[in-house]
Length: 294
Image 1 (cartoon, rainbow, N blue to C red):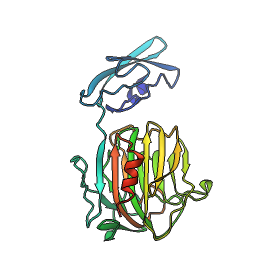
Image 2 (tube, rainbow, N blue to C red):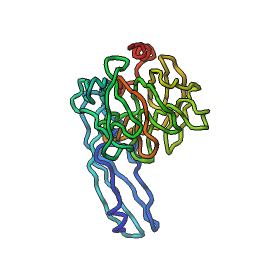
Image 3 (cartoon, rainbow, N blue to C red):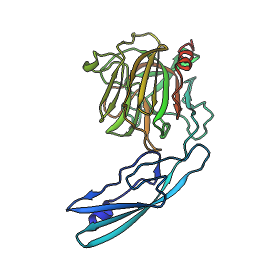
Image 4 (tube, one colour):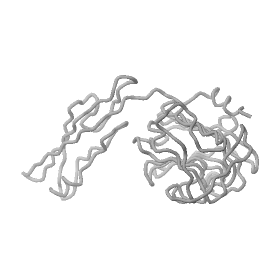
């Protein structure tokens, strides 16, 4: 009983449905009460307040029972209001890693070594599709601010000029944890004929585009996720459309990187005009315009 009590924890800031466990070790049962069932039900279903409605604070109370012994534990959680969809990051790489979007809460990128979570590395700059671009040397990457995406609806857009291709190497990587992530892969694995792809683990989702990027050529890549619907675009043309894509970014502190992840060979080549939109899947017409930046 005491061990279950101590181990039972909930996140304090919520943006999506949560798991409220009902079973624990040694035949221990857990039941739940909510101070506002319209916002968080007793089964963990979350209804976020609408834009500008304000956050909601809810108390969830767990009753832990084993045999005739019971104990309660309460959690105060904040359900964030929905955001108005907007461009939260624009990295133009014009001699620096600054974010030029108007969202002040997300700052500059940080150079990493050969993994997203280590130090070292070097990023330089050269001529890009628009002014300058970032040069990735195959042993370095860029860590972006945590929490850029905190929604099941979002858009990522960037220009890429690969110098080398290796399976699993990422261009854009976002992760809630090392087991729940999204990766834009210039050269996909053998299961998609090594085509450019989006994949996600460990709720595995392989979205091959049927196309391969050209070495030493600029290509525009973009993808949108809209409540489980995934669309991928290469040079303004839609190359994939699928449903049931995993909801990964269920917290406000997910990690993001360019050219690196936690495991694989870093990207080697150039990258430019990275744009990330939170809470909005932009239209195909808007993506077509982004693909004409040259």
